[in-house]
Image 1 (cartoon, rainbow, N blue to C red):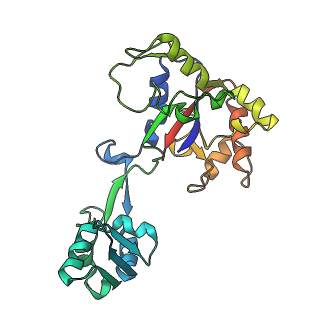
Image 2 (cartoon, rainbow, N blue to C red):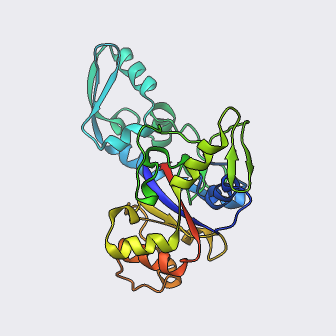
Length: 280
């Protein structure tokens, strides 16, 4: 779970709509959520080749759970555990140690039999799936478990979910920047927004003072300032800040994430920012 400060204009007709539009390019998903031109093929063929040659240790534990040892835990994601249990049952054993290459020397036969990837992609030619390469979240909430953090006054007892989020809510009726949900008093919604939206100029002041709440997990730059691929910047390290983003913010190549954040606050000091809890 991370905390993103999403930079938006100070005037908006609907905070829900403003956040939906700003965060939409970063949703995790495939063909069901995005047009094909927005997707890239996530090729796992080489990972499967490595699994084919890796020595594993399998054991059917009490309760029929399958213990997998002897390899990188991430390998387990690609394996078809039902097929492996059937393999052990066919051999009349509860434990087995070895490499799949010794069971099925043919790579494609092994992949179909023991992994989740049963067929090569007809277009890409490898094993994998078409995904949004900009994916950063699979759900988000305004504030959420970080309720009030962006204003420096964290609220307690408000729960992890909020009235403004990525989730469906047929009761939403957003007007004038206030999300009015059925059964919720406007004052409560206004309090949620007030606690989780801050002027970027105030965040800049807090950052210059060294206040920790000014430094979230990620910052999302406003729509239109650059290509979407350069708008989401985070401190996780999985995707280093691209040189193009540093150029936009006029920071040196070796700038730290804190320096990048301060530069973003300076560049967009006349904007607002919403504190969003996101799951990645």
